[in-house]
Image (cartoon, rainbow, N blue to C red; front, side, top):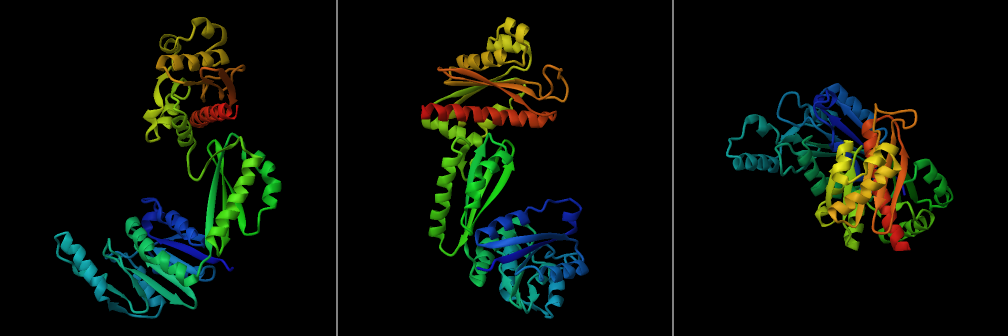
Length: 419
């Protein structure tokens, strides 16, 4: 089945000046992919007739669908409609239904319609108008030589409503696009290169119509399986069969399916087992607590935290022995184990976790360089610690440490079940 290719053109000096961020293209790319249309290029151009024409000429050589946003406002610098009228060798005509929509919007706002806004209801005769129920600028749909050109407002909520209500269904019907099914497998605790080595044989044997993408992010790698075909149910079954194989190859590294975060997955595990957790943090300064409490409903399992940045707080609030700090230092296996075990006792929780390290960029020594971090986990059965070695970037060290602690919790909980 031939791929249907789209190109997105965003029009507006404000995008090029950095005054606004183009979120429209990312959203459109996601939604087009869902209906089997691939976006191959995104171009941002200025409010210039010559630039718009050049972009259209280039896009039609590469794409079946050209989607444009921006330049449809009522002011003189909004040139898109005028340029498209000339480009398709047509004339502007009043579109009565669009005028009625504009008048209704102004009536609801308790304002008189202006002549400038009335002009927005004049559309190229060669286009099929696309209704804008949320704004005053209608969209335009053109067809020429088997290609589709669509112009929409740059206002995100207006564009999204047009796409959802009219454009996406119409594109799917026009091009008879294939079914596209995505399945995301979330992994943690394994670098992308090692993961790729483990999956090489499996990946080479994937069916031709199922593709794999590695999407690394902080502390983990998302594996996205994408299947393309005409039968959605069959695709679902085929992709699930491949996911089942994955679970046999890397069972210890998969923590979720879909777009579930690690902290959300940990929350689900704790809720399912009726367990509670508390945190003792030094080098992460509360970031671990933030990750755990960012999940709605976390009060069911998260009890509290001690940010013991200073040694006096470690002693006074967490009961770390002074001799432990004197003999081993704050950044040590012995200290972090006491922090994890004692915060569990302090908050009367099932689990206690702790962090202590040198986040940087200063404070390192030859024995304990920047990026040296200890983390610990404690429950009623055991207390264990793990040494991490990161880099000299402070914020990355804090973020990686929090992810490592969450993964340690996950490993401990899943190991308990397996045992």
